[in-house]
Image (tube, rainbow over all chains, first blue to last red; front, side, top):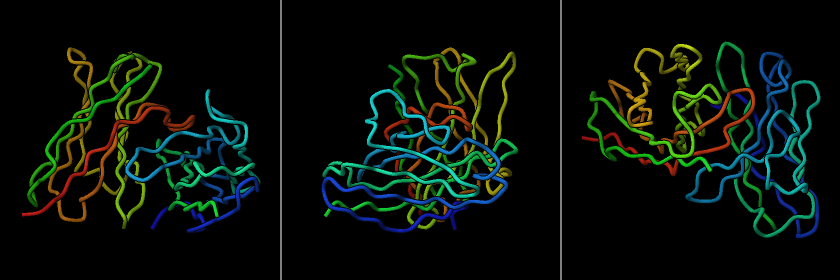
Length: 110
Length: 121
């Protein structure tokens, strides 16, 4: 059982926006601005899409937006494209030199 | 550009030690600019952070609670690589194992290609 809770699936049509939630506790998501989001295509390694709640690494399009409120972080993907179809995982620093991951959300582009 | 290349056996017998190596190019294992992590992924556990090593005037290691008694991560500066050792493995340790570069607070930006390790007799 993963430490952070994500919905197992999400979907949207091309061009639409979709938001994926990631719920933790006051000991991880709520305590630190250290939430990251990863995109994983089948058979590939995860790719960092968002770090420190809302920062994008170089090369990640601004269609990907991260936010946080209390113990819940969110990833919004706008202008959905076919290549956005993938599994998305959140992670959060959990204190005591530990890292927690969410169980993952399968994003389907209809 | 940082690249991580993993190597190691894909099959390990129960009760034995799983060992994987992650060779680094484009950075140094002994730089103080990043931590060097091991993560695994399985259908039953999802993504699970296992531990890390990093250098800040001395070597430091942090390990996840569930594997703390069985895990060791060390580095080889002469080969610019770091390794995972997980002893007393069971079939529940079957997973794809990844090495990754980054700090826990700021995300893991570079990942190895992944190594499927099966624990079976």
